[in-house]
Image (cartoon, rainbow, N blue to C red; front, side, top):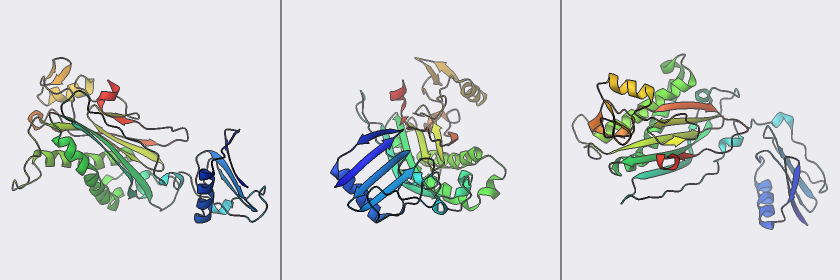
Length: 321
């Protein structure tokens, strides 16, 4: 008789779904390591029993041919850090996009699970291991004035970021010295976003062989997230948001207002505060006609993951306003 039960927070729930039971048992036969978040799973099939425990750490699981009620103890010597191993699997994610009242869609969202391997030193080497960590990429690009720049961003930002990470990891300690990890990642994302801004504006080509992607008044905000085993890294340029970001970049924010005025620009209250009376965000990719007041420099947060983390929401300003 096939049995599957789930215990969560000292509460038991019967789950007689044979499909789920078969999936677990097939996984047990195929894998030596099983990871479940804050759960205790017990599966029994005939005389074979498998017991999987994962509370704070993911443990190596061994099979037993004892009776169904037998408990299989995980070897302490084979412990694997939950931070490094458990979250290397792609997180559950979903995506939705609605055009709204505009004639054409100007916003784009992309996801790249298992996007890139990141050396442990770039995440602080918190578990004292030389193993690489898997980072998962999520991005939202909110176009304005047209769809062209946001469309270019969805095809190019992750590529440029991979290029910057590849160069940074070769000389991580040399190039960035004693800077904090957040400052080091800020340098990576600064190079990435500025590269995109130059490509979009046609400034990245000395011989003009690559013309601008769109007209001067077309641009896009960008919020990009790397979900790593131990940290979440957020880079935000504009008024799109991730739930871990604090404060959106609007022209009337005190520090942004001061920066724009110091660069010779003006913040005008025209149906809301706008740069030069036109653009309601102070940072974006594109918008060449508002250089140097509107910049592509993102704000970056390097946030340690916690057991209590539930979800991460990344969305354009249409969700938050």
